[in-house]
Length: 250
Image 1: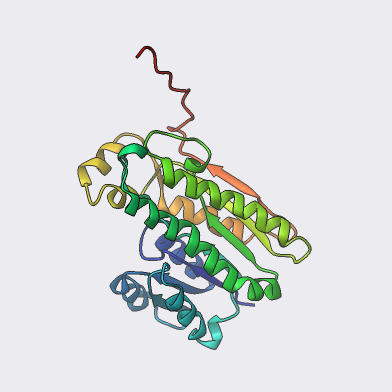
Image 2 (image 1 turned 60 degrees about the vertical axis):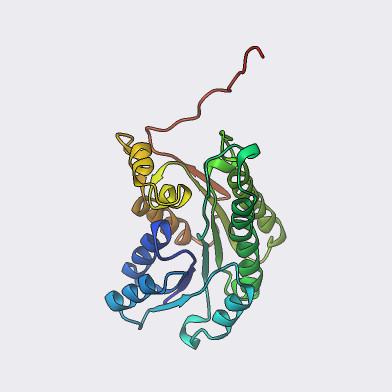
């Protein structure tokens, strides 16, 4: 039986790579994102027999619901929800950070995620499906400038555990994947398009790739139905947890 996965943030990074991975394995894929031209490129490449794309901003709850209501019948029975869409904005410490950027991260990483999850829960319960939430090691290990971004990802991980508790007995699996350093458009978005900052961050680090994480997402989605990974923290070998910072004097 062909299964269906809905992937948010499918126009770049982990989401785009996950679309390719699931299509290659014969799944039906619903791909959402803000950039219509990138979604169209996916359709041009793969056709529409097993791929349905919808362009909207996840922060727009009405647009989200309209997209769900308009899904073709062949794509309505979602077996796996991959809550991948999210972003980090800015690198400033809290006292210098932009409140508008904080709110955008909260609206995208938290509010939109829980809104879509809530809308799909009846279908996922009926299908005994799975929810895979893309969190981050930033939700576990703080760093200067991480402030609200780290807070949103801590929410995603804790929300995932809460869902597991609430969905006990339904057969629905819930996993939070917490990646570390991965080279995608993440840093470009965070730094408002500063390619030099992105290149500097990843130079010589042998970071993870979008394909690496897409493979992990697919692995979790295809586990036997009696197995659940609660949290999966993954880093490149080149990255590890540093010590505490200590301020002296003053």
